[in-house]
Length: 90
Image 1 (cartoon, helix red, strand yellow):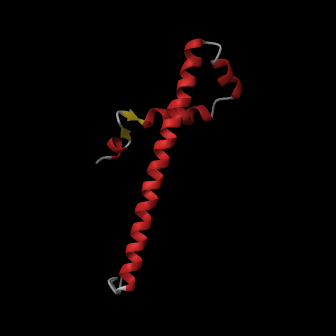
Image 2 (tube, rainbow, N blue to C red):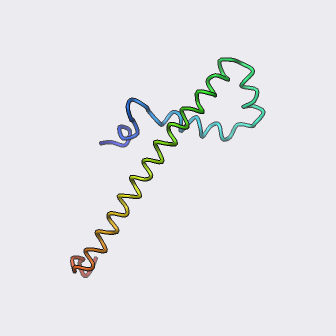
Image 3 (cartoon, rainbow, N blue to C red):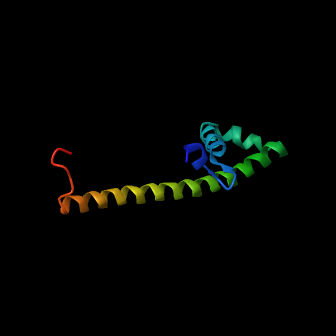
């Protein structure tokens, strides 16, 4: 599975909300507050809050999966060392 496909879950692409979250960090509070003067822009920002929340939950799951994989490799290396499976020059 390629990384772009991995980041798609149930048709949800997490790249756009991640990019928009990054851009939002560098906007001033006044710029963001002024966005709510327009119903369309303000509504889009409120939608973005939900999208970012969904992406945060998904990335937390991804981090958990990666930490689990790392722990399994460390455990396997420990087991291999205990049982003499590791190569002398590794």
